[in-house]
Image 1 (cartoon, rainbow, N blue to C red):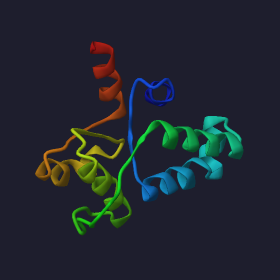
Image 2: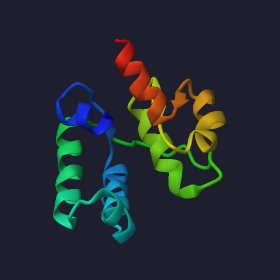
Image 3: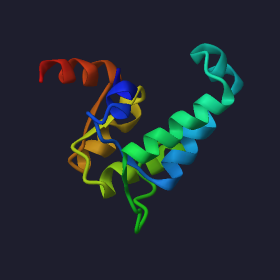
Length: 119
């Protein structure tokens, strides 16, 4: 539902170069391709569409270290530099404290979909 909202132009995500590269890396993993049913090319096309529909965020400086997992730092940095109100992630627990310190609410994709339905 969230991806469909982005592709339809109803939701504009923040995108940075490291975030786009991570999306491509994750979505093209064999296990993710098997679960999603996408081909490698379709997964790459999805990332390209996400980038086209998103708002490019420049990361002029890093906030590190803020999180337990250093591989998640660029997600928080993209949200911070993009002035996000909300960070949507399956990893809410990992981002909760640090995001709150920067005034960013952290919610699950399920909660994001629920909120979209309330509008």
